[in-house]
Length: 265
Ligand SMILES: Nc1ncnc2c1ncn2[C@@H]1O[C@H](COP(=O)(O)OP(=O)(O)OP(=O)(O)O)[C@@H](O)[C@H]1O
Ligand SMILES: Cc1ncc(CO)c(N)n1
Image (cartoon, rainbow, N blue to C red; front, side, top):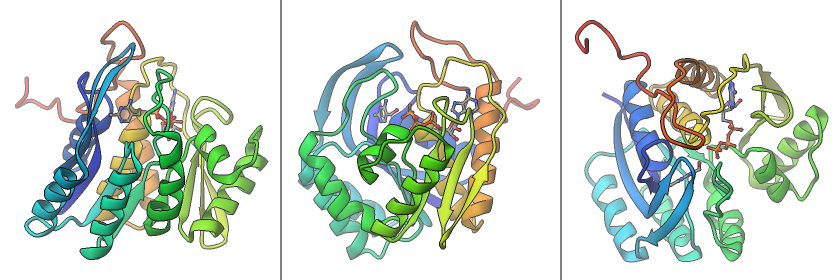
């Protein structure tokens, strides 16, 4: 069985972060391991507390995983401080990690900041250059490119600039903001649009975590970048279309929509 590692924060409400990643990797047929960067006290209405792992303990988790169940792909999500980012970059280099998908998580769907101001510089300097693929949403792509993004042409310009700066592929997610569910992948000097059918569902907690984990899972299984993005978009569309409705705010998706076979019933 292929394996994938998520390096991210825990979401107590189970829809984003580590929990979304493990469910997504499992539903996409790979074995999931995890290194937890922080605990969040969070639900569908907001983030009410953050308790970071120490850098030493994060390093300990990463050593345990890389020396035992070596991942075929890695996904990083919430990495809240400069010291944690330095540990992750060191360990990814030390162990020669491959197929690294970096979701540059900055702000939760609910609006809470999940990375400190100064850690954004560490993210740019240390982690982004190691990425195979970066998956910014529009606000994150604006921070990383220094450009304002107002339309699809701006998305192409920003994705290209970020790709050239960090030497990696970039998936700029239109999300619900500009191009409905259309995302732009910039790789090898050219862009390709992945058009998604927009699903009328306000329960979008953890969509970014889920997409990046689904891409990492497919890279782990040996699909190329284009195929992995296509398959990940099909998976997230299914999870949104299942119309799960939990909690008082923007709720989670049904990560297991495809597993409700006869045995479960
Ligand atoms: N209503 C929708 N219907 C279909 N696809 C959607 C919808 N909303 C988002 N998506 C898709 O979900 C994926 C994640 O995009 P999104 O822009 O929501 O990420 P994000 O802002 O990083 O998420 P998060 O809020 O979890 O940080 C993208 O492929 C996007 O096109
Ligand atoms: C722990 C965690 N990571 C990422 C996000 C982004 O959706 C979130 N809300 N919580």
